[in-house]
Image 1 (cartoon, rainbow, N blue to C red):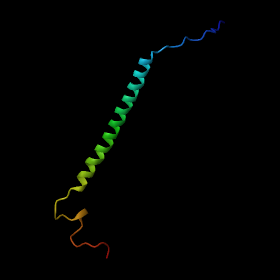
Image 2: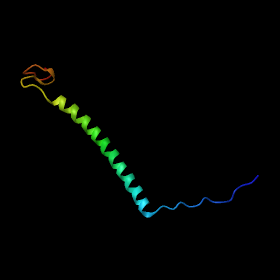
Image 3: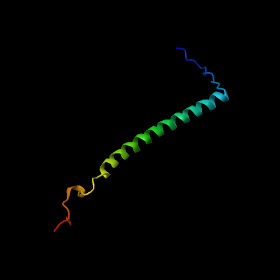
Image 4: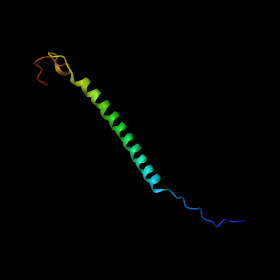
Length: 71
């Protein structure tokens, strides 16, 4: 049985390409983070806006006017 004792050759990347890959990766991470935050806060804002608006004169949570709680 033969076992190869050679090592793989090193990969040479130009400095400009390395910097470009780092910047592209950081930009992609920033875009993904922004999208996740935008979706998370947008869905929360929409649901809270629906619960806040009430017509004037309507008692909160369906309680009759003058309701003081438990007797």
